[in-house]
Structures are given as C-alpha cells and as structure tokens.
Amino acid sequence: MNIFLIIILAIIVIDYILDSLVGILNVRHAKLELPQEFAGWYDAGKYKKSQEYLKTGTRFSIVKDTFFTALIIAFILGGGFNYIDKFARQFGFGSILTGLVFGAVVVLIWELLSIPFAIYSTFVIEERFGFNRTTPKTFVFDFIKSLILLAIIGGSAFAAVIWFFRTAGSLAWLYCWIALTLFQLFLIFIAPVVIMPLFNKFKPLAEGELKEAIQDYARSQNFKMKGIYTMDGSRRSSKANAFFTGFGRFRRIALFDTLIQKHTAEELVLVLAHEVGHYKKKHILKMMFISIITSGLMFYLLSFFINNPMLFAAFRMENLSVYGSLFFFGFLYAPISMIFSIIHNILSRKNEYQADSYAVKTYPKPEVFIAALKKLTIDNLSNLTPHPLKVFLDYSHPPILERIKALRTIKIG
Image (cartoon, rainbow, N blue to C red; front, top):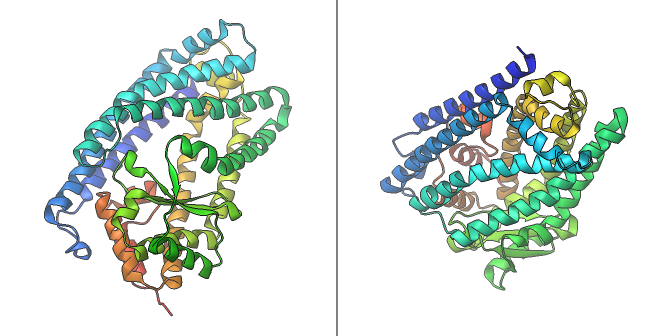
C-alpha cells in the first residue's frame, strides 16, 4: 500500500471528522437561556432564531463536507486526476499551458459542483433567515466574474510557479516565494481600485454629522486616509460590516450601507477607532509578515515533493509533472496549514482585544462601543456562546461576551 495514499486519506478523513465533531459540539454548547448581558437587547423570538440559524448552518456544512469528502476520496482512488492529465496532455502544449489546462479543469469541476450548495445557502438558508438580498442575476454575474479573476490572477501565479520549478533548480522555491510575495503586495494595492469595484459600488460618504465625526477622530489620531466610502453591501445581504483597504496615504475606509443604516455616528466612529487601533498597533504589518514567512516555508517544503514518484502513484498518475506536484502537495500540507491557521487565529484574537482597548481609550465611550458590538451581533444572528474548541480552531475574533467583559475592565483616563 502506498504510504502517501494512506497519509492523504487519513488527513482527509480526520479533517472531516474533526470539522463535523466541532460543529456538533458547537450546536450543543449553545445556551437555551439568553445571557444576562443581552437582556433587553435580544427578544426571546430572535434569540431562538439565532440558534436555529446556527443549527441550520451547521447541518448544511456537514452535508456539504460529507459530499465533497466522499467525492475527493472516490476521485483519488478512481484515478480522476490521471484522466484530467491525459485530457490536458492530448493538446500537445508545453508544460505551462498543459498545467494551466489541468488546473483549469480541476478548478472548474470543483466550482460547478459547488454551485448547487451556493444556491441553496444563498436562496434558501440566507433567505429563510432574512439575510439574502442577492438576485439570481447578481449571483450568476458574481460567479462568472470570480471565475475570470481566478483564471487571470490564479492562472498567472500558477504559471509562474511551474516556470520557476522547471527552470530555476534548487532555489526555485526561493524565487517562487519572492515573486508571489511581491505579486500579493501588488494585489493589495490594486484591489480597492480594480477588483472590488467589479462586485460593489463605492461612493464617497455624504457630507454630514457622520463624515465630520470620522474626520475629526482621524485627525485627532494623525490617521491619514484618501477617503471615506459607502459600499452597497445591501445588494447581497442585510449583514453589516466595515473595513480598511490600501496602505499609507492611499488608505480608504469602506462602510457597508447596512452598517450606516443601523448605527449612530458615535458607534460608527468607535468601529473606525477599532480599525485605527489595528493600524497603530501594527497588527496588519505583523500578520502580513507572518503570512509571508509561512508561505516561504510552504514553498520550501513543496520543493521536496516536486515530481515525487510515490506521491504521483498515490493519485494513480501515469506521468510526473510540476503542476501535478502543486495540487498533490496541497493534500499533504493541509495539517501544517491548519496549525498555522490556529496560530493565526490566536494572534488575531489577541489583536482584537488590543484594538478594542485602543478604540475606547482614544474615544472614551466604552458603553457606546459595546452597544455597537451588540447590534452587530444581533443583526448577524451570531452565536453568543460558541464551544471553546470551535473558538480555538476557527475564531479570528473573541466571542462577543468575552469581548464585552474585557472592554469593561479597561481603565480610561
């Protein structure tokens, strides 16, 4: 029995069991009684609805994971990747174009099989709980635009990696790391002006109390930005959010229109202050640095598995290839990726506490910030009492009750 096949199948099955188990534990951990902190905020009916949303989403996730886990195992054991490789090779292209055909077919199959689940999630689950605002037309165009972007951006990166590993010898991993790091930084700069507007409309925030309040706070913190924008998040969902894009003087603030509709000017300033806290504490740069280091490790490890005969035998492949190595290594790398994800989430939760502290120290209205967090939690039907294991594995933000508790311990002034 091929040792790589045993390891890969074990990784897939264990990952499926772990995800399903954590999902079930998370649902069972949800408290039937409304936490006292939210008394007067959540009515009994809406709190029950939030728990039903959690249960429905978890059941759906398990069904989806079951389908794709069984499909991937059958695809590997049945030599599905080899059939795709034969198809790609029949055109007689060079290694890069053949690799792009191979990758395109694999990704397209995955995306097409994902469509029914995306449709059910959007038009059944999200619709049932009052979140969906996506029209069928928007859904279709989002899918097409996403595929085009994936082909352009993902295809370019994939082709570059193939080229380096075919031509650069033992240092190919290093060149890949450097090139793709620069490419990722380039995408960060162009995303706000090229990519994001393909999916949403951004308009300068209208003159008024909110804009003045945000500008006053930004000036008080010597926080320079290019502009404050509203984004038509309501085009797809009633859920609310806000984010920063860009670096340096090109930084932009984007507020979902749904956020503006449901929050006061003071609450929105505090949401902004939290994001400024991330910038002032250099969280973004630190997390980016960690991401760059981990991607370097990934490419280094990948270099040991390029054209490995036993790895290809595990996938029933007849021919070796750099492009096949990239896909197959991904299965082996999954546990390491999970470990890095857990570390990332631990650091991210720590950063959230620090950003919260910065917000209420520079705009000393903690109860207003707590009110804003409560509104976001209620409007998004978020789980108030997640299982600790779910938090440990998947949460990039602390649970809301722990966040509020920490906010109340901060000394101001």
